[in-house]
Image (tube, rainbow over the protein chains, first blue to last red):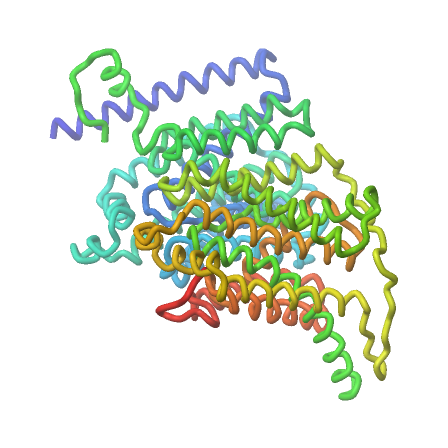
Amino acid sequence: MSKLQNTTKRDLLALGGCAVIYAIFQGLIGFGVIGPFWELNLILIGINIILAVSLNLITGFAGQFSIGHAGFMAIGAYLGAVATVKFQLPFIAAILVGAGAAGLLGFLIGLPTLRLSGDYLAIATLGLGEIIRISILNTPYLGGATGLMGIPRYTTFTWTFLAVIVTIFFIKNFVNSSHGRACISVRENEIAAEAMGIDTTKYKVMAFTIGAAFAGVAGALFSHYFYIAHPASFTFMKSFDILTMTVLGGLGSITGSITAAILLTFISAALASYPEWRMVVYSLMLIILMIYRPQGLFGNKELSLKLFGRLTGGKKRDVA
Amino acid sequence: MEAGSIAHQFVQQLINGVSLGSIYALIALGYTMIYGILKLINFAHGDIYMVGAYVGFFATSILKLSFFPALLMAMVVAAVVGMVIERVAYRPLRNSPKIAILITAIGVSLFLEYGGMLLVTPQPRTFPAVFAAELYNFGGIVINSQQIVILAISIALMIILTYVVQKTKAGKAMRAVSFDTDAAKLMGINVDQTISFTFAVGSGLAAAAGVLVGIYYNSIDPLMGIMPGLKAFIAAVLGGIGVIPGAMAGGIILGIIEAMVSGFISSTFRDAAAFGILIIILLFKPSGLMGKNVREKV
């Protein structure tokens, strides 16, 4: 009982912290301290956090390599845009449509492909992501190669922030639930998990579906910020980008994904004035970071106040 | 379309498909050898092919070399690049989690692409005509002399590769390392050297493919390696990744299927067809057409 109260208290504290962060940034935007360029990057950071955290659920917690995350993002971006442009639905409906469609597709794709493992699964998801993109490219209803234009700009910092918070809380609580534990056991040792009576396929598909649904949310936010959904935004390079953030932050660390998403978006923004050097520096950094820190910045540890306490000489405890 | 015209179109696409497929096969060989030996999907392999094409371009346009010296030079330079990449980026991660090496490979790939853009500008370049393109007409079926050259060189390189892998000591070491790295080490095989050699051979083949494509399509650019790289990878999976004859067969089959799809359906679905094949083969026979349970991999 006391443990439950403890958790609730910590959650409330975290929520309060989020509200403060939101107020600070919203204030800075309101007073014009953060100009349009950095506001754009703040929103991009938010979208990237959603993508990285949702992929972390699939790759980091359930242990299933996926390099097709941009495909689900594309589904969310396009179907969300269809909802607002062609059916004049409100933004929240667009987000839900995007999430639902991406989740459904994730479920349908996950069911057969998650029988594969390791590299083969990675290749299959890469192929599926590309198939989604090429199918969109050849659908005139969705604008084909020119992209779907005339999307209203509904995405604001508030929407993005809210979506990020919902994503993080949902995935964090999922990981800490019995379902999440089952997913982790699949990652650790699939055969042992099966022997303990865990329906491994069910949990793999569950993690995949949830991850895909949140990628759909990110897609809907993305297309409603940039007025346009274009097939070129969702190539496998985008999937690589997302995977990079997840791995760089540390597989199985939500705070790691958040940090890496912020870091990489910042670097990318800071190098925006040197376009020809941008990708060169980015790629070199990627190689160097991987060579010196192959387990990612945080490994599978979470950054928390408890960890800070430990670093400053507090009582030694296991950070789960 | 009447039956005669369809048959005619079919043979024409078959010829186009085989020449395109032999390019895929050359790139796929490198993928399959590196995967067989390191269990690494070397995403930078498509970019090595681009490096080869550029070396070939500069060798023919600036150094004024003729075709064969240029081809040889491209292969040698690419082999060195491949060995350097392995030494600098992959060797320190030999015992790291697989996903870390995968990310490094993606990093290397991006580095080659955008470093290449910085070095040689993003503008596409026109490959000099090394030999005159003659068209041979056999009862309405057109064969380009370049297609013949592509096929002849690909086959020659594949024969040489098969000889190296099957008959030489280095090839034997490659097969041993891919079969069981630890046991090979215990038998006194220098594993690092063998891996280096594998990268050199695979990169050389990719560079040859790059030069051939440059001659065939006349145009090269720093991002030219992305799609053929992926397609070649599909070809390697199709044939059974890690199996050398599989990569050759997979490349040719993929080339033919692509040519048929673009000839009879629509060229916009060409890429989708390739990825569709990938999914189907992964779902029904993940070990590939020629993969066996106990397979000989290099």
